[in-house]
Length: 329
Image 1 (tube, rainbow, N blue to C red):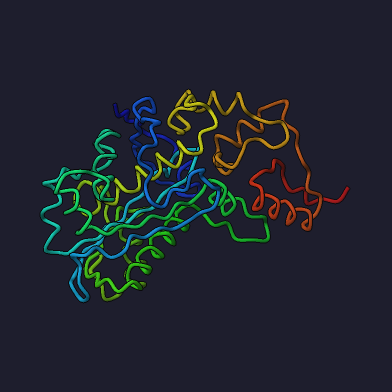
Image 2: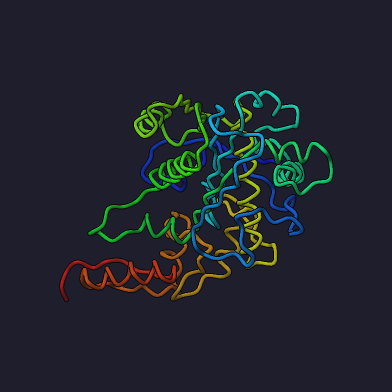
């Protein structure tokens, strides 16, 4: 069951951006905790280290064959867990067949259907068409952990803040470059936008001037190859969060608007360390909970050297609560 959350504050999605959007989230109770299928690229137990995975080039794609590629993400808004960027690619001549397999925007599909489609892409099925998908579709994922997302967004005053949009852009650029480096002849790229489509498309065009680029909203609904990437990203995100579960399935969807998620955050807040690395400390939700909790202990960093130690400690452990105090005592 899909719930539509309208007019959610986008500051929790991309912090400094003023843009807002409707967020679609799935009822966490509909997501099975069965781990019979774990996507390639997800380690069990899940480690708090950002990582990238690419499949080998599918057998149907030969050197020089023109291919199209789609990019989408999952987990941009939640306060819990990783954000996952994914791409998928196939022959231009094969792209028209994708809708016949049921590929659509991952948010419009149930978790069970997404799992079925993704497992078939990974050749984890039993039907002849499973092998067809495996032989024709290549894909890759970039898992960006909550710790690394927050580490970039909470850099000290001497460092430039690495906001969520920049992290997303860099993940997309890296994934595309890695596929090109494998020797895939990508001639067209379709991307679900992050921020204003025109400026993002212009940025990507500077990196990939010889490739036809389309950046637009709702690309996962418009282009089947983006729909495939959307499913890869969503299933990878879901399974990575299940592998990292500290709540026995009670923490909900991970979105700030989910009462189960905020209840879990309030109930597990440590007065010194806050939470573990699964929580995004850079989200306004967590900042508010820490500042409003009378039991939380404030750490005053009295000089810049201490502030740099703070940042180093956070990058190593994911734990810190406090603020920089610039005045001398």
